Length: 276
Length: 220
Image (cartoon, rainbow over all chains, first blue to last red):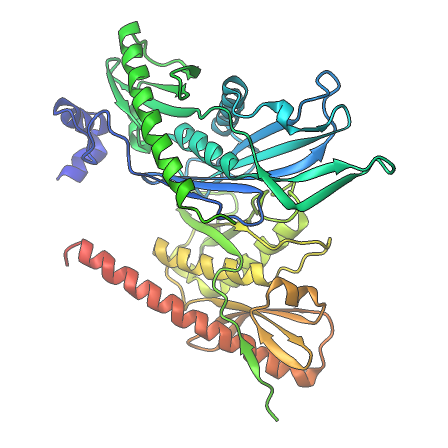
């Protein structure tokens, strides 16, 4: 009976739950799904992380290569993110060139990296004007059940924390780079941006961490990226229903709490990893 | 004379993480009137090999792998039961071999993809004739080896990729490269077949356990 009603009138079905201040999967309006993270599972990548937010699964692999620094910034390296939403994660995606959603997500991650200064690009420079590191961060969604931006940001952060770069020295005579694979060091991660996404229902109600179904029924979305000192790195509100200033403030305070939860989880996982 | 067959059941040396399946009903320009169309796509993650792959889709190896998977599964899936539909199988290996050569041996990748895709097809509820279990095998120093690791593949001996339908013992796909004397073929084939049967035992156990758990959850 309930399943039939849900198919015919999904929005009404949802409203019945929202009236009681809860959601069909039993969560409260401000509650996140169970988050799990697995760091360092891909041995062929220089750093990797797998994040599961309920059913949404995103894996991030970071590979480091050499490149010549840009001419207008000779002492900076590059961080190149790319989000891939393949057809295997959801039937809404087709194979072929990246669709709109994947491109928007890629741009969002690029903005987060740039704005929050997770890594100082100067740290990636080996020899000014000649050689620098370029970090290719590839995020692949394995299962799409809403809230892809939060999962991607978390996966990126965890993978970058896992990256170990070997020591590189430039040989004076041959001016070739010599890589010392035995001496590896972690990246210097300066800030820890954490994203919190909200969906707007009926122009008034805000729910946190929307699932795929909730995203489809929502009238608007909002993503807030906070770092540990309560600084806003990015605010992403692509159209949709309007929000008052007060509601926005509520979202920011929820984002601050979420940041603490995520940071605790990540620190726990990193501590439990055996040193290589 | 019997050659010892080393069956190394290395679970997930290469790990295709997800093979997902969709059934699309409705008209497609290539729809077949009497059976389903099977479409397989293989794309490796850019971080899955030693050097970052710049074109994960559409390159020759991915196309070839997709074609091999399609041919394997067309033999196993009961396509007559779903006319005018399309079955899509997407395989995405996340971690692969660290390759230092341009020509990368991929018998192990194929085997892992087939085993993962079998489970995915079963999970999607698409009727199949039988499990499809695959394994690679080779011939090194007079010994037939099953489930070659990267080092063994790089040794340059002959390699065989075998996909088997275990119940009937029928071979769905067999590919071999490099030279192998016909006397040795039987041993190598037997090593691969035995390893494929071991994989079948494992897959069968896993599927039964999963069904058992699912039926408990449904409260049967």
